[in-house]
Image (cartoon, rainbow, N blue to C red; front, side, top):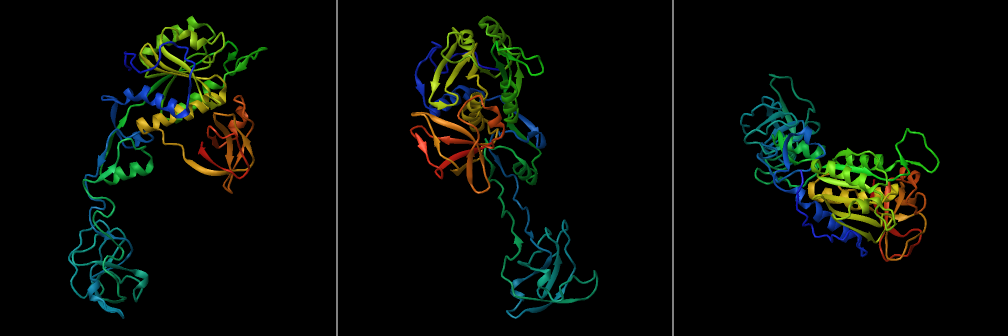
Amino acid sequence: MHRTDNSHGHTASGHGSQTRTVEAHRNAVRELLADLNGPGRTEQLPLLAALGRGLAGDVPAPVDLPPFANSQMDGFAVRSSDISGGGTLLTVVAPIAAGATAAALEPGTAAPIMTGAMIPPGADAVVPIEKAVPDAFPDPGAEATVRLPATEPGTYVRSTGSDIRAGELALAGGTFLGPGQLGLLAALGITRVAVHRKLRVLLATTGDEVVEPGNPLEPGKIYDANGTLLEAAMRQAGLEVLRAAISTDSPDQLTAMLREHAPHVDLIVTTGGVSKGAYEVVRQAAAGQDVEFLHVAMQPGGPQGIGRFDGVPFVGFPGNPVSCLVSFEMFLRPVLSSLFGSPAPRPALRARLAEPVESPAGKHQVRRGTLLPDGTVRLEGGAGSHLVHALANSNALIHVPAGTAALAAGAEVEVWML
């Protein structure tokens, strides 16, 4: 399920010391995963099974939409040239129901027509029923006349191909398939669509101090939030997740676990063990691999790992919960969206700070916040990367670009809606 070469362009030392910008690191992640968007990595699915997936190629419209001119209103189909400026009395002919084939409309007549019904040959406009005198359809088969006001050609007529013409691009490759997109494909008569296959990801959390929720919490131990946090984010992003057991701080054990699962996944993601400490288990387990550890000019989430482990794309996130989720949102999620069309990009808005904020020099700071109904955004918690409660009470990520040391209340910032 993966390539076996190591030619992704990263230093093999495993101990890179340079600082990289957020944009540069996102581009590096995109380059790392680009080969997963190659031939043979698509599948044909029925429309509803494709919900939430990314379209694998352009889809041209096979038919006009609508396929025939039809009425936008319940009313009378008319020849607009039959009606004078002051209104004209016309003879009512047989009604036209939706789904029926319409006979040609003779001069001096008006045909009752239902919404969506075919415009009869010869007619070029529809007068809504409420503008008719009388403002009701006559009984079927009864001889009747109706006075109608003057109307312009094309009024209340949905012309053939007015939505899209056959042969035009209906959806571009890379489009996220939500209800609206699937509805368009169905309207075009399409029943199956080519989408990118789901990536299978190995998620490994590390740390001697970390225990699974539900187990006794001994002194010095903490419950693992990262596994649930990232697995939920990944599943929400359309990934198939293989969750490994929590790895201890034994490099040999972690290496063996990664090596066992690597042949069966498309991507390896680890949390923790990527900083510059003496006992960083992920760094140690990746010794000899084509993996680089570096610092991104971002807070939280500065320490990062990237490369290939046994030829499999590898991304290493920091161990603090907020750091690992911010890393996913800043690097992996947007790359998945741009390469595979899924998940849908986070909505990016402009909002005004409800309070002042400070930011470390030279770093892109990502704070948690709540976008309020008045268009301001309130900070939730401090800048600490352990504040899971603040994260849970947030609906947005607030971006303070590198080079901005402080912003006053009322300053405009970019926010990504969660």
